[in-house]
Image (cartoon, rainbow, N blue to C red; front, side):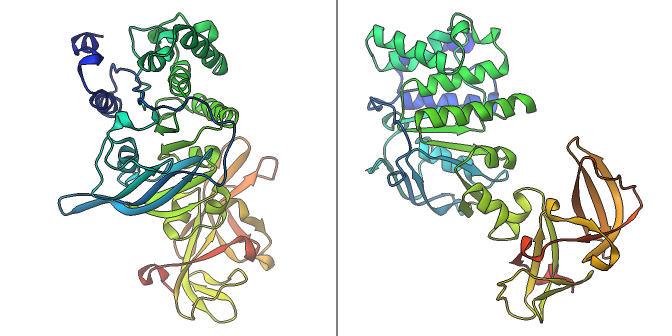
Length: 407
């Protein structure tokens, strides 16, 4: 509160500067913050549904370097109007830098940023029709819920009657009509998140960016908010870019996932495609739990490994002797009799997880793999020897490095 009182009035400073201040306070301080800044040319009407053929955002060869260190790109990315794109990656992958460039908070070193067909590369944050849901919500602590939601509309100087009706309609949309007169400190974390969402949706921006927006919530609230965000996205047809490091979040929310690593895009596609058909070993290892069994391509459609010769999926055209990794998801593994087995090992750990039990199995080579057993199946004891099989076409073979083949 004191920080806000000490700050000059909003009218006396550039709105892009205020926007930058909010971002920093949200990312770094996790303390009191201000509200969302609305661009001057925000759209007058909410999209009614996805326009599949329309490119909302085109990141055209965007790059960013600090001195000799390149932290991003060049990156090529098109976001379709009405889709929810999750930008996923580990810390340092470049996802936040990309988001800040799209927002106008960081100037790219090269490339173009096209929004709705307009070149916005050199425009400041306040000139772009973009809304942001911050990591720590960035609500005005001295304003009520209704006043927080109405703030972007007041910044646009809309008529009082329209401000009132749109704020009330948006609060109803997120289920907070009964909390309109409360202050942020009187709300739970999930309710504050809903206020932040309402404040962003109320003025109908062309593009909504969500920066790790669920990271401050506990697991149950995160799951509830995923459902809420999917509902809002479906009902409004908004174009949303959701930045996260949480793979489960990305798989649950997104129409498409853009997986980044070391400043580049590793794979772009539907969640099912990325999970079932990873483009490389990094993607397979990062998205979901994976069993990676390294070896080299052998004759007769097989992979020679330290744990034996394993069948490859149909259609593998890699050269003989080439280092490769067989990727098998834990849910594809089945415990079986010895004469059916592709692998055998000793159960090192058994983890009960309610609907399933996860078995960590140590192979003779020392490789540790994970299998999942549905609830109700006979228990398997730690130290027990087990035999494992899978359908060869439920696995995927990927190029690997010679140092990992070990065959």
